[in-house]
Image (cartoon, rainbow, N blue to C red; front, side, top):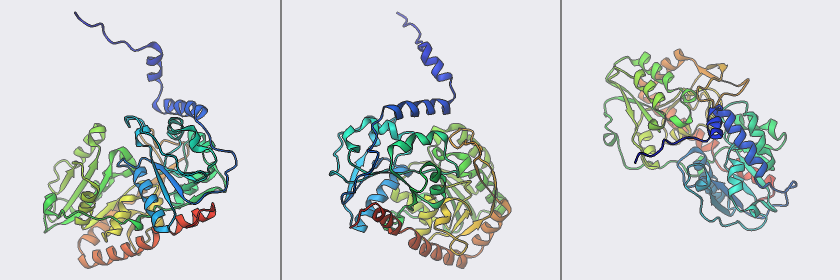
Length: 407
């Protein structure tokens, strides 16, 4: 017997016809109306800090939450981990949550669009009698309008850079702090994999561009990196560009654009296999140059890790990465500001701009570093020293002291 064709409910069909950004705003508003909210006036803070985040996930927000816990241990403040990865869309359902002691503040590594949804799935008593701080990550100088829905769930905000903190400031004037990710407290540790393990030649200068397609193709701007490399070196066999790409299967159209951009180039390789964290660090350590011609970064995890590994970095001179690099510690590429246009709509915010890095400067920087091993070594060492100084626990310790949390 032939089964009848599956038919969507008329309301479901109508819902799917709405633009994705409008659906997202409606969901945020609905969950914000239903989710529990913290006390209007934050109580005095008990000793310790509970870090709420996707601790079991491989993501930027997950890494930020793990770094917060590592920093607390270094500072000497008790840390309590609340993993909410299972409560996020596609997480498969969360497990029982152990509440931190009474009065211990919450540091919530969940951006506003999902914050009400997650809080609605957690025990309602979690927020009672606690100060709540949102550590929100964003990559444009203006936040989306629907982020205002998240303000009702926090008493203060931390941004991972001065750039992000400035974007968040209009949401909670006077209650936003720049607290950089304390990456130096847990610097990257590469596995034992060497160039041979990745199929990379020993007699070539290797330029690495590492990014995740889930983080937006246009924002990461790998097409600009490919064009700069090809202009700098044409088909030279002793110059090799490696594109380490995450989530290619989730964004097949973007991946095809990258494949088309490298077509015919024998000195450009694409790596898409999933690597553990230590192997990813080993790939970075195996490179001679790490290139980031981004249009905007809220922080810039890849160049920060590269600097801590002593790898020389070429990067766009704009946005969050400027908290831990300068012209003495990295080769910075000037940029003009252009309207931020994102075909996916994630970074489509009225009035927002981002960087268009100078292609001529990028070509010159690539040639200069590739041709001078001594310069690469010196720049890599200066970059490592700068990152160690800039990415310590001091900003987090000061932010904790401000709310009354001390060792």
